[in-house]
Image (cartoon, rainbow, N blue to C red; front, side, top):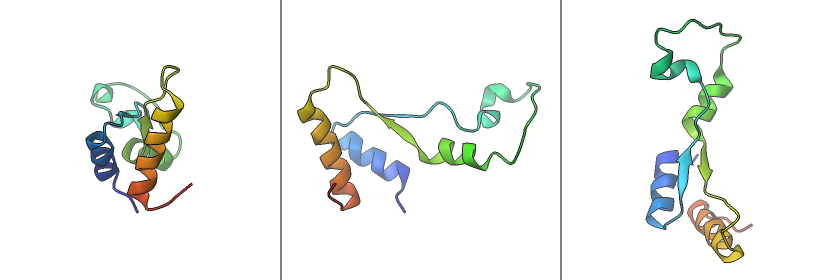
Length: 82
């Protein structure tokens, strides 16, 4: 198991940009407090997305070297080598 907070802190300390996913269980977002909506199912997967995922910065201006650096930092943190 990997703590998202610990991994994001490590990546931030190593200058790797990340963002939380704006998705997941939207009914848990504050703006939904007084909204009317219908729920279908238990939303377990949306909770998992909301609590355990994140984006790694990618864009056309990133070089291969930058992307390899990001991959190497993730490999180091996880103790693996792709």
